[in-house]
Amino acid sequence: MMIHLPARRLCRTVVLAFAVLTLPACNGGRVTHTSGPGLDEPTTPPGAVQTPFRVGAAKVRITPTESQVAGEEENRLLGQTTLQHFHLGGYGFGPLQSFPDPINMDLTDPAGATHYTTAEGVEEHTWLRLMLITDERDNTQVAFVTVDAIGAGNVIQDGIRQAVSQASGVPPENVYFGQTHTHSGADLQGLWGGVPKSWIADLYTAAEQAAEQAAAELTPATLSFKQFETDAFNNYRRPRLYPDIDADTTASLLRAYAADGGELVATLAQYNAHPTSVGSSNDPRLPHPDYVLGLTDTLEAEGGTALYFNGPIADASGSGGNCEGDDYVRVRCRGHDLARAMLDSEAETIAITGALSARNTQVQIPVTNPVFLAAALIGAFNGYLDYSLVPLDSIPFLSEQIAFLPQAIPLATVAVSRISFSEQLEIVTIPGEATNTVGEYIQSLAPDTPMMLFGLTQDSMGYLLPEEEFNYISLAGETGFLVPFTNYEEWISMGPLSVPLLRVLGYNRLFDQDAQANIPPSVAACYGADTHERCFIEDVVAQLNYAMAAYADACREQLGEDNPICGLLAMGSLFQAGGALDLSALSSALPIDLSQALATPDGQTLQQRLAALLAPLRATSTH
Image (cartoon, rainbow, N blue to C red; front, top):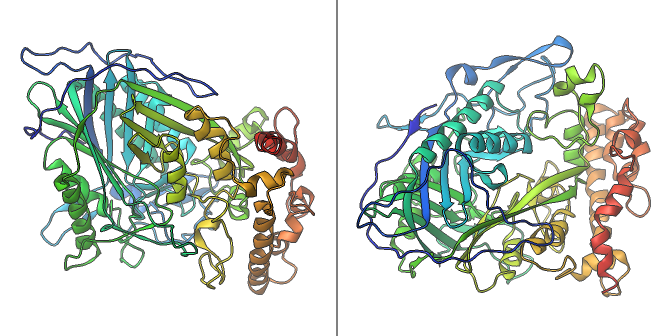
């Protein structure tokens, strides 16, 4: 790991001082006005612009070591071991990392070297980047963190939050950790084979180092913001069923300038495009930030440290950057051109003068995707995601083996957040890869205020698709997820309930809306409302039945007609009439009683817990 604190340059514009406005909390969200250790009182030199803000930033290299790429021996269940390689996310499927050798096979190609080096001998590394912002008016503190990775499970999220909080004094709930979603970044979710534990420990150390450096470099600063539209760098990538649906083309730039001379301290940039161009066809596969590196390098040439957050990218592929050369040359060109478009845009630049406030709330979401449930049962998420309902560490013997045991994940608890600068700017987090239509809903909650949407921040739930767009079946007959006539995004999601519950219990709360506000008719119909539409869950179950039958047939062809796992793939054995999960069918093929294993600590069954979670939706039918 290497700390890098870039030099500053003189700024080109002067930004005004700030006014005061606080944001009230309600409905489960809360305003955080907590000061902490490590952030000293500000000093403003004579002649400097008066400002209540202080900003600090730093970045740390997170390139794996030669040993980590070669593979490191790690303990597994009952004293067995495995050689854990450094796997990159995004291509294939490798859920066996919790098993000992020889079961833990590299089903996806691990990294073949620590980093990429250009033909000119320039090394291109992956990074952790961090920006601290504090407001002395009420001591509100926030930290933004990005890592060049495809995503990160909640175990990793919590580790980063704690490391940053302990080093800087920022409350952990105000540490907003996002991933750039490069498909050549570390697998921090366990779906593609995982990474060595030593590298994860190094990642936490990097976060601590960056937070310490940023806190030490805090300086009085002013903020400027601009936002504009450009379709030159993304394309719509989902089936175009509706002509009015397109990818989000909004580009945003928030910059912090030192008050004592205007040097650029830090930049927050946001756009919407999948970083997938350094793909699986490159041999060997190498850790790389994709186009994000060209973008951040270009922004940092102006001074300071630059962070990039992807926004709603479920339906946005990358575009632009038409330089001659290989994939690495083209993505650097794309990032450079996107950064230049941001810097050169003639959109109005405004001085942000509102007080900083932060609200955070949590939403529990049932995981109904059979692929994710199966991955959890074989321990693919261990060390990355922790969604167990039963406290296994309280059981003798199991507490010593918990890192190697399967876990059930019927419920996921995710955080969503709203960071406001009065009524001038909203920053809202999205815990996964959302479509533009999801982003548009969030923006509709504050229609008169510019908004930055930080996707894959606070959690990585996979794809977030609204119920009207959710379809396991590809109407075009495409092979999205392993077999024909399947869409890819739906199978890499927690299921169709994610977006409805995020709207009801997450974003409506953050923006002081009633839980029942803006509920689509297809959701209200699930609870008896006369909406003249079919409940969307009926459609989803029918789609699952159709698609899973194809998976079951393919499984039997490979593993035999009597294989019990193949029987599980047929949704008829998983779901009872009406769409309820039939846990007895799962238990018949597994050495545990899932009806008990999936019960909550207070004794509720999965079905009872789901009913309680969905109660706010039921209330919709009476309004």
